[in-house]
Length: 174
Image 1: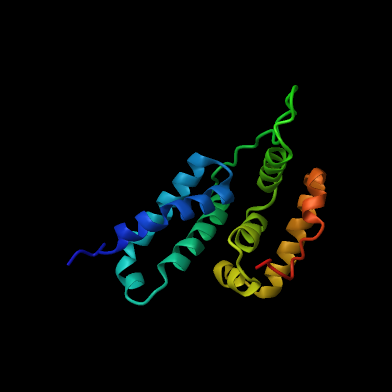
Image 2: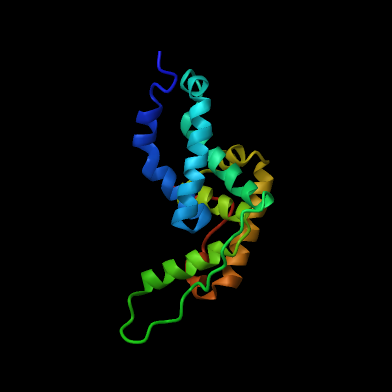
C-alpha cells in the first residue's frame, strides 16, 4: 500500500489555493513557495493519519500559519521593501491597482500574527471561531488582533481609509 495514496491528488487539487494563502502571508512568491513546500513535506509524513479521518485542508492551513509565524523566531530574515513604489508619472493605472499595492505594502508591515488573522478573516472569509481554532488561540485574541491589525492598516495606509472604514472586526462579511 502506498503511504502517500491520495496525497498527490490533494496537492494537485489544493495547491493554487494554498499557494495564494502562503503568498498573502509572506508577500513574496519565492518565500511563499518555500513555505508551502516545507509544510507539504511535513504533511506528507503524516498523510496516513490525516487521510484516515483527519481534515487535511485545515491541517495544512494551520501548518502554513504556524510555520510562517515561527520563521521569524528561527531567524528567517524578512526583506524590507519600499511599498508602495513611487507614484508613476503619466496616466493613472487605476485606483484598484493602487489600492492593491498600498494594501500589500501595509500588510507586509504588520506582524506575522496580525497578517495571519487578516488573511484568515477577510481573504479566506473565516469566522472568528474558525480563525481562533486555526491559530490555536481564543476568539477574544482573534478579535483584539483583528482590531489592532485594522487600526495599524489605517495608520500605515491612510489612502485606504474609505475601504477600511466599514470593516467591523466582530463580523466577517458572508
